Amino acid sequence: MAREIMKGEDASNPMNRLISFARQTASTEPEQAITDVVSRLQLEGMHMGKCVYKNYMTKDHLGPSLRLKLQSKGFPEDVVNSIVENAQSGKHYEDWDESFVHSPDGESRLCQWALWVQDSDDAHVLVALMATCVSFRTFRFIQEFREAQEPVFADQQEHEHVQIDGWLGRYQDVRLVTRRRQVGERTVFHPVYRQHVMQATDMDAIKVYMMYQACSEAVRLLSIGSEP
Image (cartoon, helix red, strand yellow):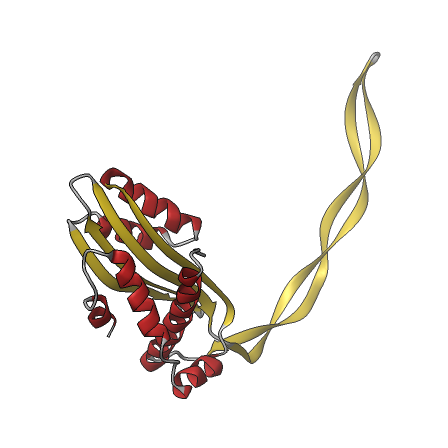
């Protein structure tokens, strides 16, 4: 659907393409089944970065300008490199792409972007970009507790014999020093966490939900002539 929207506007005006894409995507709220999935997964610590960018510039400033903008919004370096490289690949470029990383411990990162680039003349280029990057954890719950022994430490004062060089020669002295020593052990119980399993359909639901949120925000920002 995203690619069909991207091809529906005048290719010479990337800004129109961006506005059309955002409005079309934000015009239909996600189905209840999608919001139910997001609620069920109970995403924790969610952080969402957004970048809505439009510009008319000389071609030699295209790559550095995009890189600086994306880096200022905290986008991962591999995503920044991909967007910048593709943006400089020809006279006219448009793409919709994404990058998803999910680690076994439940840490996830989803980046999505829509990019339009069009030569204005031999020296200048028009560019429009909308990108989102979401990091989150899937909800964890304690499956069991495992017993373990941990050392117990305490500060202890001890007398120490030292050799000191004095005016009349070397002599011995006794000093009181404090050292940290293990004085025993204690039993502790460490929680063993289990993650909610994320299915492929769950990830699709998250992508739809996040893009709807991003496009809704983009429409609001563009309508007042500002950017996030």
